[in-house]
Picture (cartoon, rainbow, N blue to C red):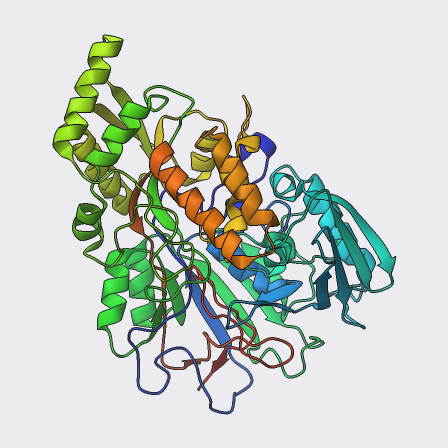
Length: 544
């Protein structure tokens, strides 16, 4: 779920996972039907038909420099645009629109070479100049620009070639071009349309062409008859219907009014798992990079969380294991850091273990030192599920002796509030990324200022910056792994977030929907399936 960022009249795609809900990482099936249990089909595809996709949120618009590009935004983007690269099934980055993406030996210069004869939906060429125009627009955009400050120059060095020069080594830069959550700079829009600032009627190279968008009702696109990938897409059209109420979304799938849906709501996922008539996948056992993590975002620049004792007490008071059991019925596993078991970046973080007695003792110490009670407000989106999560955290913090008030903040304003620092704590979900470097902007102390901070927790620990630089610049994967394990440990001691659970996304479909979790690279090899509720529409077909 994303949100508009009114402070700059737009919303942040690189803020893709920021929200007050819960969500996660990549495609792994736990249930389904015998014919296609994992959304993967080896049958001969049938052409034609229209698909209706139910989404859990609406997008604010299509522009890669302005849209939220949360899970719904990524789906929209993959429909009308194409990314420069794609994540392969083995987790490596492979070319997509680009023919090749190669660095020099020290990763300070990257060369992007485009495939020949690519055209946008309006027949304008998608060449080196178009890519350069997109990258420079991203560099100058208010919210995507901070993620690209390492780029010092973008030059057109040939009709199909762009050279991207860095001010310092940027080893995982290609992951930003892979078109997943957090990677909206990957999507290439027709330059004239992009420069217009429009948020609708997008023009890309993608498998479908924009037809209509009625915000909060539907977005429809029709088959691109001149798509550059031979044989694709199979569908005649695709329509996305935002249905924010998770129970209504589930009912829509079961009634057949939508053909496929995604969700990050635990009780809906549990219901989908139990329904053997549906094709089903979730990301509970497989993750690309790191999943979305449910947490409470703390403002370390304001009382009471500018006091480490209060943060320690809060961490000891809020039990992730109890949260997982009570709030998610065990669907979402407990967490104590930004990385999960099974990924190389996971290691002990030193995050405080639950200890209500010690938490209460620390709060009493703070009250004695300051001469006043510890009071705070927790912001949350006022939907029933998130309200219940906020009430759980409120109760646990009050047990430790804090005075806690809940404040409903509409989804459209929740990210603004965090960026501007006008909060003490917020129910939150963030950090899903195919590589941890995509979260650099959120964790770097260099992204803190007095007015507008992409580092929304406002954690100033200089050791965090050192670890992030090591993760970005090291060419040795073992060194990068160690750097992000250090990031986890620093979060365990700094406590900018109260960890609650690892989010889990699921996708389910009517039996007629084939191959929704089986994307391929242009060369025909397997690509990575569902990530954080986003699939690829290109290869989906209907068995009707």
